[in-house]
Image (cartoon, rainbow, N blue to C red; front, side, top):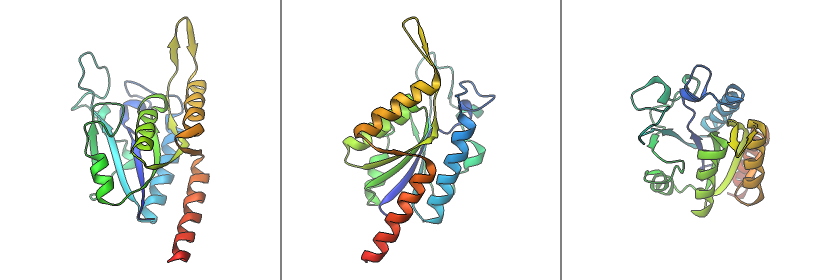
Length: 194
């Protein structure tokens, strides 16, 4: 699957237990992200890690030089797998991501990461607008509760709302297992067509 790349978004220590911005369901999302990474490496897919560095005044997490900004130890990038730093929710904004993917003739992205309502959403929409076909593993993503007016919207509802919106137009949204199954079948079809 040379035209498909796995994009892992902000799977960094601050989002996990003990971090400065722990997300609901982070550990479960991490296990599914690990499954996607194992699959991508087995299939020799392009793998790219995005790492958020908070440079805006008043930032409270993802501070440069801290342990919290590092990629989680369960997902150690290999030497040939780039880790691209970003300062905005959209992974394409002021980064070399688009140029890198195009240089490798990537046309389809398998996405996962954190947070569902922020960087995952912004990156998936931007990828779609840049003409990438997007597949999003919803159970390899996590988020947090949000406050709106006088209401607290639970993390599960936040996550579900954003996955539903992305699935309506921007991406094929599926479980990790279904994403792997879909890409395995796609790869088999491509091999037959050669």
